[in-house]
View: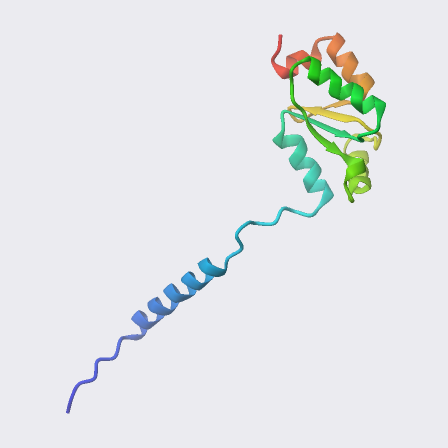
Length: 135
């Protein structure tokens, strides 16, 4: 009688697991989708950027706030709410977060500065320069 070689169950499971891992690697998503939550987006913008401005492209106060940073040779990350489908949702998140849904809303190093008038006060009293490390 000829002895037939049969792999043991442990080896079969190892081969099967390896095959499954290869299939998962091949068919895995190439990029993880970002959270679709407006609040997660707002928090990511605020805490991932040195300067974040929630703005509307046509707003004169927003232009004034952006000009302040331009004069300081700083490049803010600007979210133009009027150019986004979820702009109104983001404004509602800002209302919950800082008590205002008006624009601009300026954040520096994760700290809420406020609107254009608040930003100008922060420039006059040196708070903005301190936050930016420009003193």
